[in-house]
Image 1 (cartoon, rainbow, N blue to C red):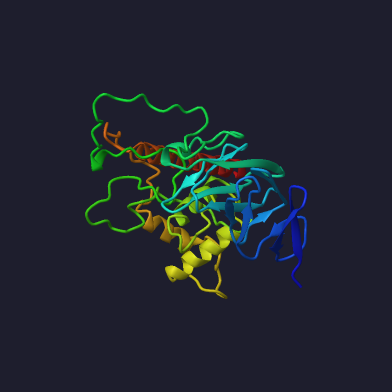
Image 2: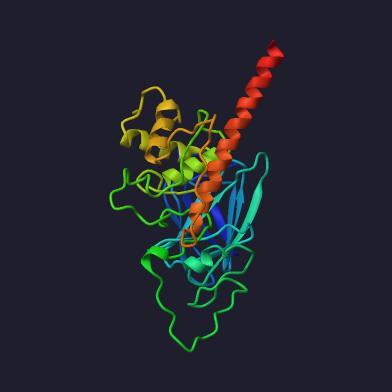
Length: 324
């Protein structure tokens, strides 16, 4: 039997949510809308969201998250989500989003969110920080001043040299100029995805974040787009949709919802990354002055993966010597 959770809005306004079960952690079974009393603006909370507590008062709402919780807030008005955890706002064409999750073990966090202004690509990275953020229709982040007027018009940037933010990769951002005939529509857009271990529900780590970034590229697979480093229920559902789309596994089959050898091989294939050579790791080329800042970030990730492989080989050799 479904339970009903009531959340207080100030002194006398109540919101009722459909829940999967009544427990310390709330799990929503459908989307619902929060309305701020001070502005009347509505904010959608994602289906399948999990949290410990949610309080709404005035122009803010306060969220309490347990270590395995994750939730996404969506604003159709493209509000800038200023918050005390300094999580950047994701700006899309038709809305803005705040992806909340807890990636640490055994720690409960509280975040106070103060939506304001209008989200833009420039204000997204600066949307964190308490009650900062933009104001009015300008949408500028707190403390960010407008550039001085110029006496001459600024020429429009060339399509091949358009700067791309180097912050967390969002589903609507292209990493580099698209080739004329890409080998794969996903490989042209994402960082290399190399996962060296099986991933199951409850797993944590940077490779989980890498997996979530990849899956978030396709909203039909991972519409929530939460990058938390934790393999929760939403991530497992996204993996299952990925496996069904590429005919890796179906419901009831072994490995369904688990990132095993076949799924890892498909991820590597779609990201366009060849298997690394441990004996002679390739040296990525230095970015040209007109390269996107994100290319340098990808190259840094490749170097990190190569170093991790070399360290693992050394550790395996030491373990073998100890057994002898």
